[in-house]
Amino acid sequence: MTDELPDAVAQAFDHHDAYERTEDGSYRLTTTVFDGRVTAEDAEEWRTSYTVTVRAPTLHAATEDDVGDAVADGWFETLELRLEDAPKATRADVELDAFSVERDGEDVVTTYEFTLGSADRAADVAKAFVEYVEGTYVEGIVPGYSYEGKVADLVSDASSGGGEGEVGGTPL
Image (cartoon, rainbow, N blue to C red):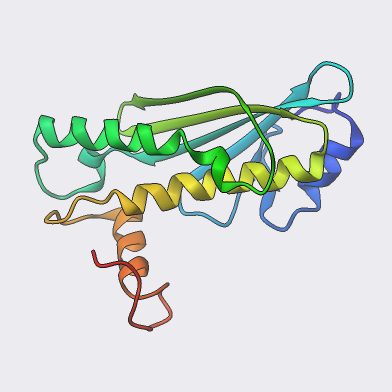
């Protein structure tokens, strides 16, 4: 986000409890394990274009085990199909201007682009997108592998009901 944006956009993200401004002017979502960032620029009339980018590990990068190419490719294709439904997880009527899921080395990079007039609503929509990526990723965990790093933490939290020591969560 740049200084040229309407004050309402900067204020909405600055005052939202889930974001912190980064040195490059983007906003990082602090409520998820994966790296979710939002940038914005002026659009036509009174609206603003937002880009939400989420970086998560590939299946190869998240496991201690060797993962066959067929499993990794199938996992990626399924993840991509599921992530396309993110706008349905928001409480807003939002249409995507662009959507992509790509492999970048050891990362899966998901990008959502959308345009809205309400900066407060945009902050909530962007948060929902990042959380949707993380939740969908966890739902797509392939059983039978030993996970490490951030994904191991997510699996542990999901299987224990959120890390509070409660039994519950999804059957992983």
